[in-house]
Length: 283
DNA sequence: ATAAGTACCTGCGGGC
DNA sequence: TGCCCGCAGGTACTTA
Image (cartoon, rainbow, N blue to C red):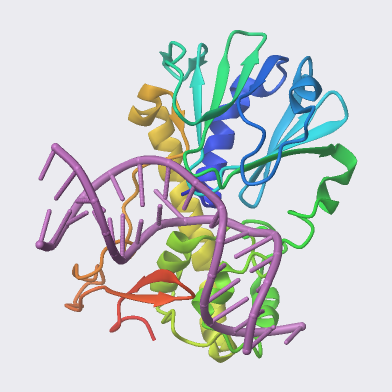
């Protein structure tokens, strides 16, 4: 599930539990997720103090006192469960072991972080902190959509001449890093651009609309995640999933939210992925 | 180089 | 109740 806003929400939830604290014990319950873990990962994590928990695109990056950085990707179904430490108003007991609890980090504070991922599309890796940007999974990522490197000029240049639908282009992490299927659909709706429009045919006007809209969509989702973090979601200690009202995603056949528009949200398949949009509002 | 399709996994809900 | 199907928020790899 997790796109940039969900990963950022997880980061914010984990930061108080991890930053400044020592990993007392790392339990690795299987040799791999999407790829093999470094074979000595548990030993390299044990005793390390987490200096900072960062995010790049959909990747979490924990800088360690050992000079290494732990990279975590949640894939499609990865979740982080926090237990044994105050998280907001709650303190959760350690949960009974779950079927897909692949990695468990016990902090010296008594807090426990459980990484659960049924589909196992997630990933973890270790690298020298000074080589993070060169990691194969990160090296070719485009700019952060909430950062200064993402602006109209960049997006216009990246879309120019491309013969692929703008929907597919925005999912391309080399163009902008962190968007996924949900927020691309939502951003195109807010910018009133059809997902079917070819990237190269998105004119300057539309690109100009798209950039701030992408930022707004992500900011709104992060804000929604933050509020759910403080409230009920935290009731079970789980980070990574939260309810959020979408305008088009998952709303096939439901009425368009645009005032005065009576059209129904349509679903089409592009590059084997569902796109939801209003055929009347989005051109 | 670019674009489209395939593959990796498990779980869930709907239709029968 | 159970089986089969399609579907799911990601992305590296292969194929044209």
